[in-house]
Image (cartoon, rainbow, N blue to C red; front, side, top):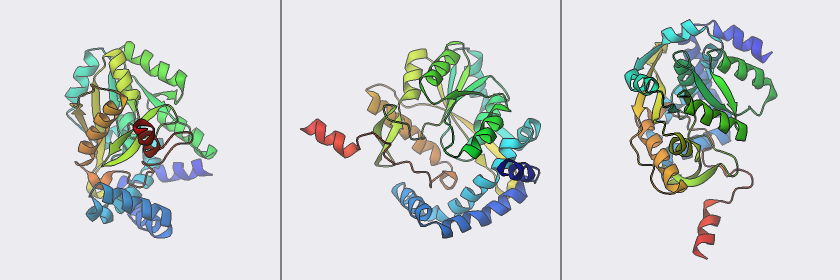
Length: 286
């Protein structure tokens, strides 16, 4: 049923989907106290609360554009995206030392990886959705553009490292909350967030450069501009310092289009089995 609905919606023009999304954004905000509280709190932490209204509309657009992004034909998607500073990515690809693309939950993050995969071989870390109904839809959608899916476990990490050593590209969501043992606590907009250490480890292990990218949504359904930005933070120090450097780079990227960040994401949650930052500080000071 869900797949049929997505197929039906995927034929609609992007301006129509975005118009529906604007309405949906307000409805979800009004209907869900949890969503409303988390979005307001996260935006306040980052001092972007004045953009709440715009962010609601962009969040709704993000949901309604998924049928097109997941099920649209590759040539149709390619026509919707204009690349900015692609030469940065192309130079790294041509060097054949591997490339680590980091895409936060900013803009149309589902499009970012697919757009790159249309131009070069790419492996992305994939975590199965909690709802089984979404699993075949997500897997087919992401694989349709040529992306190779690596599971979010040890075998998936090995697949990513292998791809980099072969000079290929990989993609990661650096602001996705990792599972126990896969991250450290590091400040994100001034509050500790459990942050993955994988991107820094892979960069140190393989020597592959890190490139930041996000697909900014244009107004009135005119498409997207996918921007490519070099990673300039230092990855010296321990895992916590490296994670903070990654988060700092994400903060700078989000500042370019703050209304298009996925502020309702539960970025500051404590995964099962993980000690909270206060517990760790207490142990270190004991």
